[in-house]
Length: 198
Image (cartoon, helix red, strand yellow):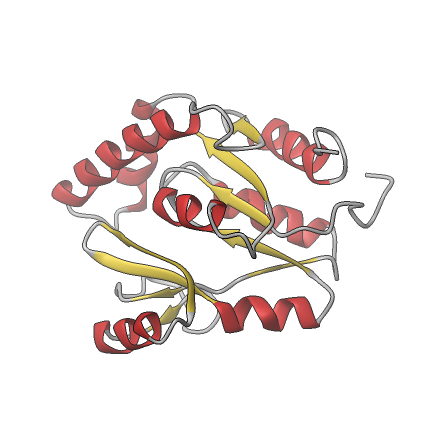
């Protein structure tokens, strides 16, 4: 891209079903444009997967710690996903704003619904979707980290997320991640001006 900084400095909310590739696309965007974006590190009560690091991948916390943070108003959004709690802390977001970088929130459907109705939070919304649910199920199985029950729960959840993404006004853009490079170009174009609301 010719421009190294987006004109629109609002946070980016990137959502999509587990296994749709949103993490890969987000990291690609961050790597391609140093000193521009920073991913908010969510809090979660789930166990770390192989290769995940506390404080970098997620803040892995106990249910008690999570509930305390939530009840004290410390979370911008909070959701349960396949029996685990997730949330974005207001402190994490503020820390990124102070560095003058653009925050990226990788959050699920209920989190998106919560931040969209928050009058103090103005953002741009991107939904990453797989070509179809069959492809998604294949990717989830390929991870080798989930039980059959959890895979089925994630696929069912993905079905509901895809329905939500079709709702008028839910997202500013919907990107099909069928081809990683093509999807990335589409994401980059959106972020750097193409499709920006004026």
